[in-house]
Amino acid sequence: MVEKKKILSCIQPTGNVHLGNYFGAIENWVNLQEGYDTYYGIVNYHAQTMPYNPAKLRELTWDVALRLHACGIKIENIFIQSLVPEHTELAWILSCMCSYGELSRMTQFKDKSAHLKESDKDYFVSAGLFTYPVLQAADILIYKPHFVPVGKDQEQHLELTRNIATRFNSLVGQDFFPIPEALFTKVPKVMSTADPMRKMSSSMGEKHNIDMFADPAKITKQIKSAVTDSGNVTYPDMSPGVENLFSIMKATGANELYDKMINQYKAGTLRYGDLKSDLAEAIVEFTKPFRRKLDQILSDKKHFKNEIKKASYQTRQVAQETLKNVRNISGLI
Ligand code: AMP
Image (cartoon, rainbow, N blue to C red; front, side, top):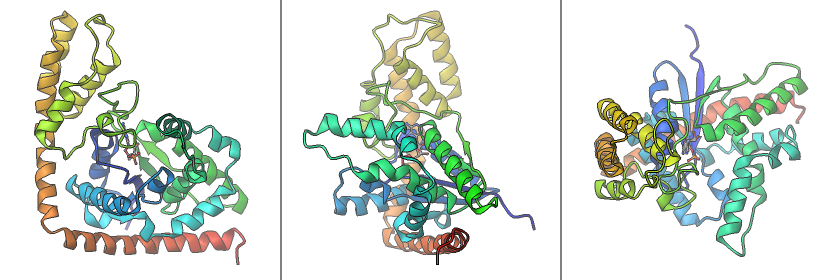
């Protein structure tokens, strides 16, 4: 039997599961379950890199895990990072394969530390925030995947992971880690509807993301208040806000609507109010089955949580095997 190629990807439990997560990554994760050996982690250690509340972190970790299942990820493919503590030991070993200069160039570190500085006069930038791309490299490499389906925002981190893997392989004189490749969706970067120059993100605050599981009234309100332009940008140009609304519309699969509205845009007859209300309807329709599935899951939460724990223990065995070999070939006793 031919062994299936492996896929790994993760999500931080820092807030809700939003349209950026779904269209940028999770949609791919669901499809790749057929034909690949897939591992999808809820990376709760990563959520400790920004200021957080312990009780809220625990709650969000389960919330995100259950929402992934509602999006179509099979329970057996989900794991909780802290139930596989081998990630942190591998992160230590890999941190010695990564330079200070490389970590200082990570744009996510720069963005997140700038955000902390802007939002709090007593801001605190943790060493964990600086080094988390190494933990991310460990999250990935410990499963020796061939592909990592992520949004465009993770491209730089994945490049770092590839460099770290290459250095480790060279240290030990064998191709121990496969060099993983990124897989992107058709919409690899969804922008915030409140500020289309920034990516949609849960860590930047509620208005900067659209929750896949929010009630229809809330989704509609957020889309209706999306930033566009004052009509001064016309075809063939398009402002970032309008472009983002069009790409979200396309991602929902509302192709006829998309073609109709794009033609109106080209002809200069499109009213942004219509674009927003039709898009809101398309999103509400698209997300309806996910909301239904989540309601079912939440009615038997305990069962699903237990299943996720069991799946995490299974996943841990794979991680333990890799770590055992890493310790051995890297000279540890
Ligand atoms: P995070 O929420 O940062 O843990 O991201 C989980 C997954 O969603 C990663 O693969 C990200 O690349 C992807 N992702 C997060 N935000 C966006 C976005 N605005 N557009 C596209 N993909 C995203």
